[in-house]
Image: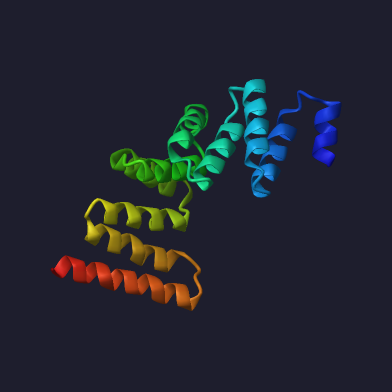
Length: 168
């Protein structure tokens, strides 16, 4: 409500458009979120947050091909945040561009060390038929992530399946 009032009073208030887009995205009001992100992009095409938000929302909607363009654009503007690299890497993995995916996921990890990147890399290496690398990432994920015991057991089971796959 307050954000809508801010936009009504100051229609060129970029951060209000980004904030309201984020709220719409959280509420799964995707069309309204996309519209608000697009408005923010039109207002300030040289600022990364709206591109990142739009790309992340599209990834969460499993619209991977559509997510790649805004995420790449955000990285043309700002290369300092791990989130756009992580979401771009995920989108690229899901569209079959494994080489670019690996590059961007590794960059995301280098910048911010998000443990979740380890899980995405493990998935990528499994898709590429590289179980040893997948196991390495899963082991690192277990060390870095603060997971409940049942989740740790699940990941250890995946590691064991990958080991058996390597033995065959």
